[in-house]
Image (cartoon, rainbow, N blue to C red):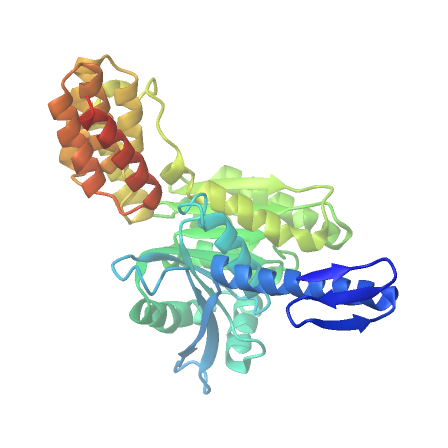
Length: 406
């Protein structure tokens, strides 16, 4: 313990030794000690609280170029622990995009994958000559699809082989790379499920997107695809606005029902802000149906549990290609009904999702309200047995204790 006196003496009571230092030095030592303590505590907290990005290199070889291309990959937090979980993939051709994409993803996914489902981020190497040549050919030679061949035959299989992917892929890009995002969409839409194109370069027949889009968008088949395309009125984008207007007209006129699209203008914002805005809103748009709970009075919900389950089966099979659970929409319907009808919906939910802890908990609440404590206890125990989330474990344990005390 340190004691300070007006005359500037410092008493070190622990050692019974006395020092006489000028007060100015005592003040400086105190400030430095406090600063060092602050940064030391901050460093420990940061290590304990904030996840470190798990980044590694994926080397991809191809017959289309001589030297392997080293792609940068960031895995979601918890990837190594949740070994039974599979993940979305987002790919971007710009090497420098990796930091902002990984950071945005970590922020937008850490709250239960909302609004960004946990995703493997993959970005291209910087200055790889073979990959650069494929891009140049795609931009300048109409009909050249060697870049797409590389994606289909080499890159995407390498990602799927090494990582636990769920089959849903997003192609993200800015300016010239956004033009290549659109080039991929119209020429080989099956490669990716979703496309985000921020401020695409399209003038001077860039990758022949504007020439080929009308016919190819109209003939798009198979699984649904998402497109988010945007621009702004910044100085750097002015020379692309005419071609963007042409693209907008083509999409609105020729896109068929397989393309779920949004076209956005971020006028008044800075040029370098565009990929951030487009990625954030594009992700919201792409996964909106995953996160949106059907209202109890919606057309689908009013038809009952079978219609809700059929709707989510369509989303799972025909839109996303991975399981999109109907649990929250089923519970929303049940919560709106009288107890007798609600019990039936909760039971349907449990039959469809035997590990739906929230359904067991809700069912327990209905029985408790009806005075059937034995049933309430039984279902609350099942709710507790079906979750490993600390918050819900605590919540269900507390609720169970209240039922057992009655």
